[in-house]
Length: 324
Image (cartoon, rainbow, N blue to C red; front, side, top):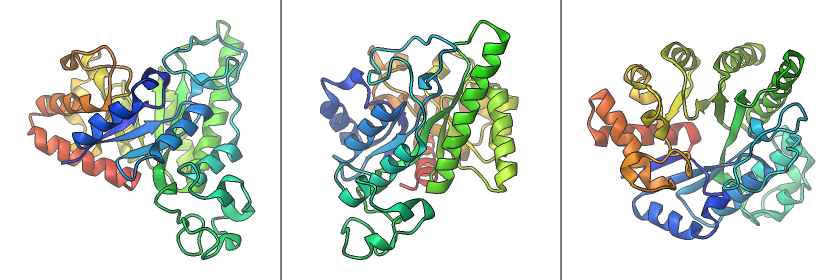
């Protein structure tokens, strides 16, 4: 039975010395992996990694709010993550669009070079049948298997953990994050991809932004609130909007029993957020995808369900959301 770690960071420097071995261990235990980008460089790395595997390894691309370029706050970065700009990054929508459409490295040179201006419009007569074998017949959005490895936009969202000290700077800081977040949501809509949301100390603002966005565009947003840390009332609001909740090793640090008990199993995804938040049962310092089984076991215990059922349903949920 396949299980899916829906949020991993094997694209980070923490795995620079044994990446292939970690993935090999995961696939040997039928653990599939979604590697999630935090900026352009780690997003590109996630896409490159996915391109090396026929199945079981996928990529999400996005700009994490703490890596957003701003002179309003000093952010402490993690050396195990690597590949970040010292002053942050400005979100370049077209660059991320091109990365999403290029898929696995080298799968379609025409796409990588950006020679098709109609991509954003959803069709590309210049890349008709035969001009790019890896594309499905006559339509750019119907990408080849290599290109379909980009299955989500993320992780994106709001993060107020590091905060400016003055009220005015804090307001500007929040507005900048929201502005970029909305652009990333637009990209997800244009590419018809689900979203992996990051939210730290910002649930009320994130909920407000999402509600307004859904109302204004008069359409549903598909996605998961990764590493959920809110309370049940906040969880219920996300669930009412149709979102999934992602749980990882944070459940051993925070009291999320009520949220897990009340959240329908059909709306739960399991993840590791590796190399962080290692479950205590793993007996290791660095987390990796094979330890996602411990999250499933803990959820089964909290919900008083059979472990196999939790593993099966959460895998179905991931396949449905990410179309894999």
